[in-house]
Image (cartoon, rainbow, N blue to C red):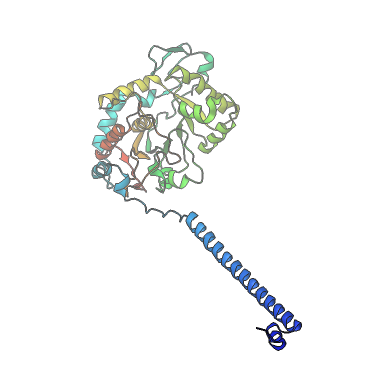
Length: 378
């Protein structure tokens, strides 16, 4: 069948018309492709944010919730009943019992003669005499002229008895006690083991010092046995003013040279403090005395030594910072071992709870007053 020219022309269109249609189709295709690319880009962006956000959420960990402080019974570890028993025996309405005080101090003085013999002096220990160490019974030291010169001339208490004495231990119970002014009001103040008395603490422990002990362990650990630079030791002594520094020079052989270096340091730096030495005879007698009263430890603590000395030298003895438990008696919150650090005592040598129990007994008998954060004294 023949197709006429009109029909063919109608079907194919003119060349101009055909080009226009092609250009229109290409433009439409390009618009579609651009739209598709934009949509794809938008979808990719949304997907990336979703993935990134999920990754951030997955890696993020909320900060741990702070636990509320445990109840006192939760960290007291069974000491609650023990502390309550102590508080039951301890009375804040304390009154001195003159009869009990005189009976106990008379017994202590007859056994130990601390008022006369607690300190080595030039009056009670002559050149050429022999000193027997109390910690090493087989060790003897003959007093040379050089050693004799380091002895104080007379007993530091002389012939006087003090009215009120404060013996300050270093227990964590003193922190936030506010006992500083009460302690400083005592006529004679005894401190233990070179404690810090700076502004951070003096509100609670006071600053007045008449006698302070210096255990060899303190000199070894904090001042390198005074074998090197000694200025830090001399500077610490400045906080004690004109106090006497009590050293156990004749307890063990190793203590002698260390104590002499301490004495020479005070002299070399023209310190206002002065060294005095424990008499080993007194320490032996004191150990026998407390042993007969139920204390079986290898060595007495510095605290009970100082309390014993004060009982012979003072009419009224007040103890501060004596507390062997790791929780405060009022509130049962956790305490550090010392008011300035948490260094533990050597349980192999000292029986602190037993010592405390004996002191608590003397408190209940009206012989001395044991403060458990109950300042001011009355």
